[in-house]
Image (tube, rainbow, N blue to C red):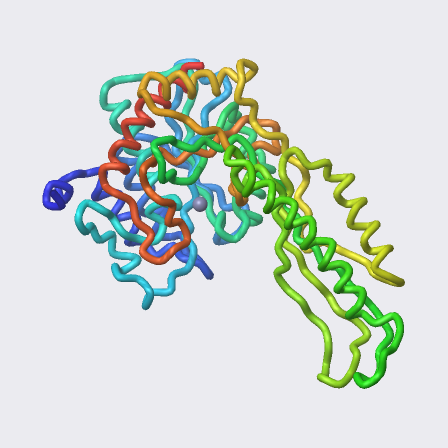
Length: 398
Ligand code: ZN
């Protein structure tokens, strides 16, 4: 079985891409650019490279449509991958090894396979002599895995991006372990919040009033109580997924200088992902109220406070959705529409008012993104190309 794959050009392209160590920290994207330029040349697509932030290139390939005045379709992927604990891998993370029909490598799910599926689908459609109404752009962006601040977040602000005139975008989703394919039309809003509790400092043998420990306990209780509400909702309703509820985690606690001194300040940091149904203003007012109730001088600030981004419509008001859905129906694949549990570059595209769907054409496969021995069955990878061969003409002919 594996021997057959050795001569499969799509599989070999993926293995070549996996061998490029575009791994954090301090990613050097030069090799990715060289690889992608040669791909574009082989397919016959013009390439532009935009270095909006130095050393953080965005590469765009363009397949011009028959009516280039129409808005375009963007196929987005990120070039970077998360770090590895190499010793914990049974298969080398940057070798593109195939064992028993499964390909291993950092980024094979997240998301180099999808980049290669886009390329292969375009190559095949183009070789068949097909043309579509809309221009199709393929963007390869840096630094998604560190939040995209120097990647897509900056790129969407530029004239280079505006000149692409994107009307609809596809980006990464998550593999699904069941029969369904997941499609993500929105993301929760990310808030990273510090609550600072000042108090009376003094000797650790006394029972002083107004200590920061009492205040931080009140704050942690409030957040953990709310966390429990979300947890119970999730446990009691099988229809809900993690993307549907607000998640709260206490991620850092700091303060104190010595074990017998009551400190004058303590700080708790929370990672909060707000459900799309959450009223953000009301939520922040609740935090303000807890700070007041916790005691004198308690304040909060944000390390990250993302704005609310409306989800992409998945109904008849969105013709791209209709096209996407009807090609899925034609393929006989079942879609599950979900809210993405984490953050992807889609949110920057949606924030410009452009509809975007997160989609990974993989099912019956557990998600292994960011894990040791990240892997993808080769058959799933190859099937994914065929799925894009159906979806791409549909959305590019809207
Ligand atoms: Zn990713």
